[in-house]
Image (cartoon, chains in turn orange, red):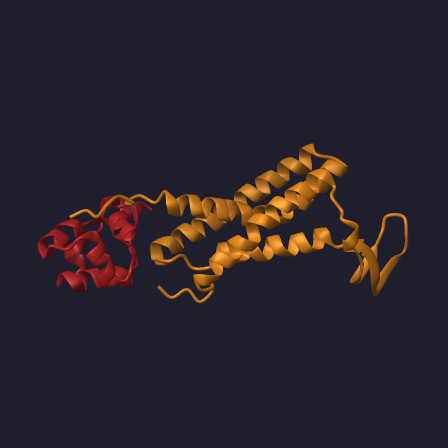
Length: 158
Length: 69
């Protein structure tokens, strides 16, 4: 089956290599508020607004770049893992892929609804940070679970 | 939708893997079709019928429940 919107299979391995360490490091960073000083840099910002200061447009902003780097790596890694073809991509896999996407959207917004109703202040802020990635994480988890537990994985049947 | 892929495959003495290879899908897909867990696309149904040298209607058959989906 022709699926022009998927990447070739070889990108999947690259995706896993980027994705797994980035997620682990991202989790550690979020829990321990880890900010190495060598990543304190000035970066270009389209808009830079702080709660107690002015809003600046098209300028430089001082920040610790670890969260930016990790976010970019997690998103690129999970996109590669999610949307590279499996070794035997066919129409049945495509069906599982589409079902998993719908499932991931449902789960993501149910989680978000619960967070909106029950979390406040910083807790809600952290939930939003995690929510950036949950659609892709839910999709990857559900899709691979379904693919690896696909019925008919037994030895050849006559 | 009922189908007789398993019977036709047995007549041709093909394994699920061999039929899968001929029509360009995975063995799990053939298994899913045979156990009615997956309804193939028109193209795949036509390919299977061609390999079996039959008409699609001889292999795939609508059931009463298909009309109420």
